[in-house]
Structure formats: C-alpha cells, structure tokens
Image (cartoon, rainbow, N blue to C red; front, top):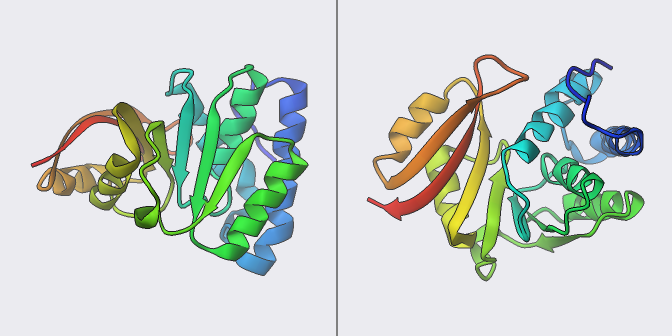
Length: 202
C-alpha cells in the first residue's frame, strides 16, 4: 500500500483510514463499491484522492456529499475533520439502499458523526450546505445543478474531475455562470479538483 502524502495525519487517524479501507474491501464484492481493479491501489486511487478535498475547504458547519456510494470522499473528509476537532455536520446522500447500509456501518464502526439520507438528490429538501462535494457521480453541468439546490448562496462546491475536466467546464458554461478555481490533482497529473462558487443560471 503506497502512501504519498499522509504526513499531516495522526497515527490514530491513519489507523481509522486503514480500517475504513478494509471495510470497503470487505463490502466491495457484494455491492461493487469500487472497481475490483482499483482495490490493490485503494490508498492512492480513493483515500489520498479524497484527502485532497479536505484541505480545499475551510472549517464549516455543514458539508453535504452527493452520491456517496463507497464513502469517498465523505468518510475520509469526516475522519480528517474529526482529527482536527472540527464540528462539521456531514450528510451523505445515496439512493442505493445497500450502499446506505454500508455507509451506516462504516460510520458506526469509525465512530463518526454523520447522517445518511437514502433518497434521490433532487427529491431532498434543500440542505443549505456550506460545502457540497461529489466524486465520480455525473458530468459537471449536472453536478452544478444538483449542488446549487443544496448549497447556501455563499457556499462552495468541490468536484474532483478527470482528464476531460476542461471540456466539461466548457459545456457546463452553456447553462451555468460560476467562478471556477481548478486545482491540479496530486494523485493524477491529468486531473483537477474544481472549486466552484457563485453559481447562477445563464
């Protein structure tokens, strides 16, 4: 298991991240949380990739993760917030009941304070979050629409995106006006993490 930038993680949090990775590996054959091919590289492909998002958000009261699935980035971010003594309320939104069962199990075993909402994102009453995140859920234009529904007016959306992020950004601007700060990914040189705010319809 290769770890490239866990120098700011305490031993206790490292142990919890390791426990979380083992829970994901245990459940994956049953409900396909992550691809089988990525299981041997779970630390870099999923955990470290999720860790990047934490450093991009200030200490906030409310963080909502959309399409939480395998718990990336939400549970990883919640563990880091817990380490730093932040009282952020985490809400994980997932429509698949089996994945919700996994998420609740992981939250319980890791002793985290987080809620899991088993419903479609568009059906949920607006959550007024300070931060909305989503990883590998949908194209950027769709994500921006979903995030806008659940963000405070001064909130920020944080989306890790792959090598096609520039094309997605161009397409999204046909429907949306927003401020986008693209931060190079530390786990994939062709990818970026998009930090988006001031979302408005075109």
